[in-house]
Length: 130
Ligand SMILES: [Cu+2]
Image (cartoon, rainbow, N blue to C red; front, top):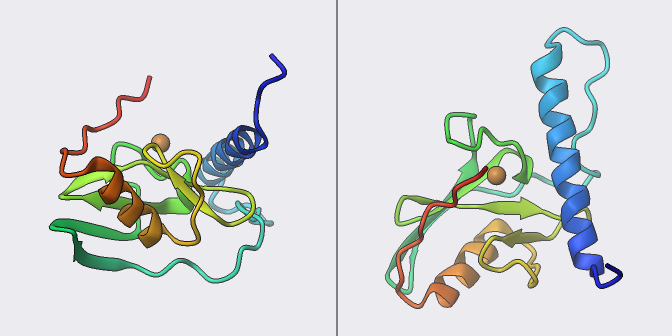
C-alpha cells in the first residue's frame, strides 16, 4: 500500500519510540546512560484540570498505574469524565488522540478539548488494546 500518509508514518514512529523507551525503563534501572525517549520537545506539558463544555477533562504525568502503563504519550495521561483518552505525542512534539488522529494539536489540553468537541456529549468508551 502506498497510501500511508506522513501522519500515519509519524504515528507509527512515535509508538515505536515509546515502546523502546518502555523496554529501556523496565530493563535496567541502574544503567549508565538513560536514553532520551522523545526528541527534545521542549518543556514537559503541564497538568490541567478543568470543565470544558460540561465535561471534566484532566491531564498530567501518569505514574504507570493505568491500564496503559504509559507505554506511549511520554507518560502523560488524559481523562474525560474519568475515562482515559488515549493520547500520543508525535515526533514533532504535537499531540493526537484516538479521536483526533489526523488533527495534531500543540498540547494535551488542546487534544482533550478537541476530543470533547468531537464526542458531542457521547461518553468516552475505553479503548480495548489487543
Ligand atoms: Cu496505549
